Length: 239
Image (cartoon, rainbow, N blue to C red; front, top):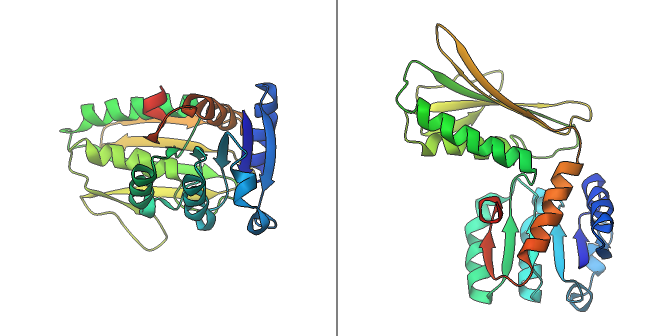
């Protein structure tokens, strides 16, 4: 595949390394400094775009790829309040978009465990769920897209929780809220914990990333899987 990297920070460089190991070729490296000079004719020469930029840039980058007829794999979080717009444009233009808040295969197995645990806990009102996430200091969105996905799965299970709230020093949770604690620390690639606690005990599941490679490998796998497809997809479709 010929790949356009939209976002060329640490994750973009990791994606390039993994892509080369899979015998793919990066033909475009676009970041905030040069993306405005990227021509549509150049973008159209790519077989797929990997969008790992910033929350402020992701929506426009994805939109541009759809309009150019280039399949796009997006791992940027913090923009998804506009995801329904992207889905609509994707249908209208017969585009191909693959979005995931986390491309790690391990994290997506973790999502399934979280879903099953939420089902088991649905009627266990004596337990309170909380979510904790730790990431490197360069991560711009808070909480992480992965933490939000974990919280939304618990909410969707149909228990007493109907919304999530980011914890700060001032707020406390209500009976219907899941508290999400976010920490930005050093160069931590990502740690996510779901905890249920009662007066008598605690249940905890955790996923800890060792580096960016797991995310990059999953994104390249998604790019390969997306070839020849049309529509809006996520990790559950591929897995």
